[in-house]
Length: 467
Ligand SMILES: Cc1cc2nc3c(=O)[nH]c(=O)nc-3n(C[C@H](O)[C@H](O)[C@H](O)COP(=O)(O)OP(=O)(O)OC[C@H]3O[C@@H](n4cnc5c(N)ncnc54)[C@H](O)[C@@H]3O)c2cc1C
Image (cartoon, rainbow, N blue to C red):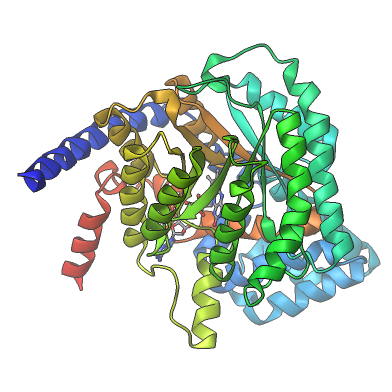
């Protein structure tokens, strides 16, 4: 009986998902696809990258190293190193640039200038600025568009204690600097309230591994002490200035340690009753469901809810490559539909437990988001009890549409210098140009709306049938 009721509910959710997805799609079709608009395509960089895998790999290696190259000679030397072997795969204009880049000092300088300008433009698409005043302008602009924000300071792989101190200090400055700025904004119930109460306008996301240079899963106790010592002052500042703190999830090797430290610190007397905190769960990991169940039990023991940002996971290329060359089992799903399917199952779980695990559904995939809305409606979850999250510079037209439909949409807004920003930029470029990316399919006119909205398990069945 219970099984039949569950099946009936799933059918209702699927029908609602299709209905919502189609209605969203009709609205989006009338809008300009910003990710593929003129300014983005100016340099045709992504077009080339998508056309040829070898160009893509070398292009992104080059983008990654570019900020470190101080002289025009170094830039042209790297151009040759990366592109000479694949020059026949390059479009003719790009081949011309590579061939003549070191013809004389003038061409070399021109090419280096062009490469830097183009890389900066690409970075500006995804990174909100490097200085605090640029960041303030960016978040104010988001607010005017009816969008909330969470700020993320770029800078991965902290290798020394002074770097960890600097990371901590920047968050302290950010929280204290931002609080008076956002408190002057006029009220927006859509952005400033959930189903229970007013929620902080100032919202930051941080990575625990950047708070301690010796963050090592083989030394969980030492790592936890190192991280917590720098995390507590940030949490105190956040409480004092009414800010929300979200813990990002990094690669799989750090996941359990990150979850442990999160649970330890938020169970301390000082922070146990604090609701303005949360953590990320990645659906490309088969164990996401178990982790969410653990978090639910932990929240019940704690007695205070937390936020959960559900994502698919940003380190798919890294996890598959690293586990492959080490000969270890791959920690992530290797079929895209399985990640999508798990994302949907965990969305349902979050909606069922929204009072304890307040859901933030983070995706640019229309099917994944329509499905979340469908579960929310079917389970009578108040619309403001959960939020949609998207990345700065991605799917802006979708973000706007969801905001117009009354959802609280929060934009994950990275800021910081270009060099630490490169790893982030390359992850976004990989994601946008991946064969499996929803956004890539969404702007491919040969992919139908039926395919875009297809249930992940049905995608799996079709792939199995096709062999
Ligand atoms: C607000 C926000 C915050 C985020 N914070 C984090 C974070 O803290 N940690 C983090 O890891 N990520 C984070 N991400 C990134 C996120 O994990 C995804 O990389 C990104 O959102 C793309 O997923 P999608 O649902 O938008 O797009 P889709 O195109 O539907 O999905 C792409 C994703 O599917 C998965 N995938 C791709 N190919 C395959 C394959 N062959 N087999 C199995 N799975 C595959 C990958 O996870 C890939 O990123 C965040 C995203 C957002 C929007």
